[in-house]
Image (cartoon, rainbow over the protein chains, first blue to last red):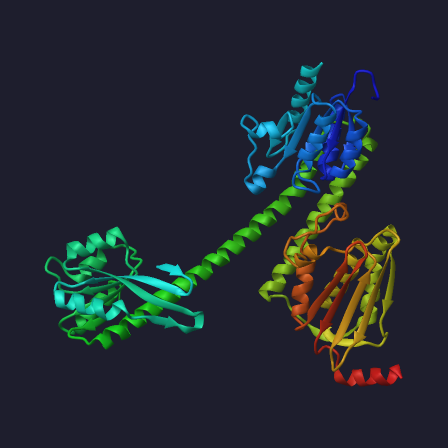
Length: 133
Length: 392
């Protein structure tokens, strides 16, 4: 990890502009960012396991890319914070409710739906990382 | 109106105070069927009866009939009073009257009766009139359905369009926010990437709007066409000039095979759209260092063909199927970085249709794609003879 106290976030997102913007925002708020633009690229970085938390887009090459990546991250380190970002509910009418049964099979700590706000992603990251340390 | 496969059941309400009349009419229609041959559908009837105005009103309120066969003179009210009490009736009315008076017929028709029938009438007469009314009901419902379908298509188009326009705006807005907050410091050069991406997205959005204008002009038929003699080779040279910057950047080699003398009768702008679409796609969806070949040939009679093959990224079968749909962009790992409005091929297809032409697409994933366009009746006969001699 680059700096001593800087936490590194793995951001996997196939929308290049979204990836760029999320990275700039997180970097401006004292995080280091590892970028990947696909599930495939993400999987390579997951194996290296040199990040503190992950922000994953749900739908990339596959409809469930984010879930797959999250599952792989949690298999290596169950406590590593994972946020899944998705606008899936707008498009398909799917709704993920973490509080009910679905939470047990969706291996992510937070699912952010609809319009993604960077502030929200950051504050969730702050919270989850603080909880862990 | 209940529908099952090819069979439509219409609800009929017969209102008459004479029980003989009621039963007679009901019997006459119970097994009656009206065939709509053009649509392959058969219409039959489900019949209810009422003996006075109050009963009729109750029956209509319970379940609105499709066809109301209504006696004018009822014990408690007149037929016209019944029709009048429904503002916008969804049923068609046939008024029955004992005295065939013109005055009454006019009044009934004004109040919304579709037709009228004078007592006494034969079963055959009733059937003729019912058949006419059924045709009316059937056609107006078909028209309504068509109208709804049109509205739905329009709505879908607008909502996809709105999404396509919203996405670049949201992206540029996002970048502007980041700049506004100076998240990358005070040095303007730190923002090069942000500015570059914003420009790409706004250029893409402008292209989308331009394509949309092209497409609507094509579809409305309002686009002015000037059919003139167009030298295909020099037109291709012009287009190549426009595409060459992109081709150089992607190191794609463009090869053109075209008889320099080949001229066709066509609208210059439309030909430019076709050629430009073919060449731009052949470069855009190519691999770095790939190649593209455009072959233009006079085929038999006065038709001609343009074939554009590339060594590009190609398409899978299921991707190929969706190729010409509006706003459909084949989304995969390889196309992610390529900008496009998703309207280019819709425009190409519509333009080719103006020449009674056709497009054939062959593609192999990761190997390349070839577009084959045939245009009919564009090569003038005289010049085609010249061509044959010059080829020798």
